[in-house]
Length: 298
Image (cartoon, rainbow, N blue to C red):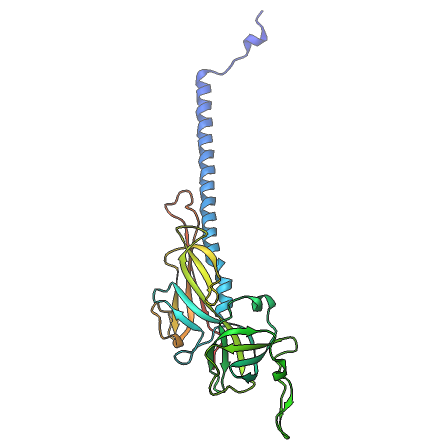
C-alpha cells in the first residue's frame, strides 16, 4: 500500500527557477521604485534648502531697506555707498524718531518717540538726520549718544516777558537723549521742533561664508563698531543687487548717482548646501524681489 506522503507532488526544478525569476523581477522593480522615490525626495529636499537660503535674509533686508530715505541731491539719501559689482551696498537705517528740543554748543537734545528697547539698545549708532522746512534731511555724524538727555530743554520756559517756549515732547513714554555732533555745531542752527531721527550705517554684502567654507554668504555689518553677522548661506555667484534709477524700469546693474536710486532689486539666488543624488551640482533657487524706499521727502 502506497503511503499518502509519497503520493504528494513537489516543485519541479523548472517551476522553482520560474518562481525565482518572477520574484527577482518584482524585487528589482520594487528596489528601483524605492531608489527613484528616495532620489526624488532628495532632490525636493535640496530645492527646499535652496529656497530657504534665498528667503533667509529677506525679512531682515526688507525691515531695514523700507525705512531708507530717497535722496534729492548729492550727499543726501539713505543709500550711502554701492559697489559697482553689485555685491555690496551701505545704507543709513533709521531706528528712532523724535523732535529737536534744544541746542547747547554742538550738543543736540531730542525727545524721541517710543521705540523697541532691544533695537534701541543695539550698538552701532552712527549719527542723526534733521529735516528742514523744505522737507530735506541733512545727515550729521555723531560720536556720542547720551540717553539721559537734558530733559529741561524739552519743558516750558519763559525766555522774555511775553514769549514762552512751548513744551516739546515726542511722547511721555519716549526718551530724551543728547546727541553730540562730531564736526561741531550745525550752522545755521536748526529750528527747535525739527523732526530728527537716529540712524545706523549698515552694510550688506555677498562674500565668503564662514558657516559653509568655500561658498558665498550674505552678511550684515554695523559700520560703526564693526559688529557683523552672516544672515544666510550658501548663495550662487549670480546673487547681487541692482538699482532702480528714478522712475526707470527695469532695475539696472550699473550704479546711478546715489540720490537717484529709488529702490533695489535683490537677486537672492540661494543654493542647497549639498549636491543631491542624481545631480551634478547643488540646486539653485533663483528668487528676485524688489524693495522701494518709503521714507520719501515729497
